[in-house]
Length: 104
Image (cartoon, rainbow, N blue to C red; front, side, top):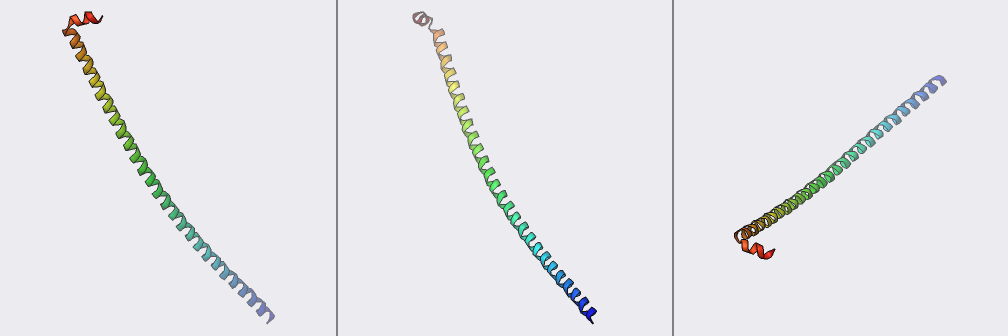
């Protein structure tokens, strides 16, 4: 009888240990799922921020390129006007040789 009580006590202890172990495993699984969900949310937030930053950088780059194109076009137009004025001046000097001597 004492032996039966001793064996029963050990069996009850093992079952209690297994129960705690299962509870610990369940808790660990739940914590793991929560950590995974949190990491996924953080990843989504980071991805959204990165997309916004890339979109903003792309827009800024396009604006900068448009400004640079405008400046180049303006510089080219000014250069063409200056070249035309210089050609006109040369033609004028060629057509009025007497004026050339007076300026020298």
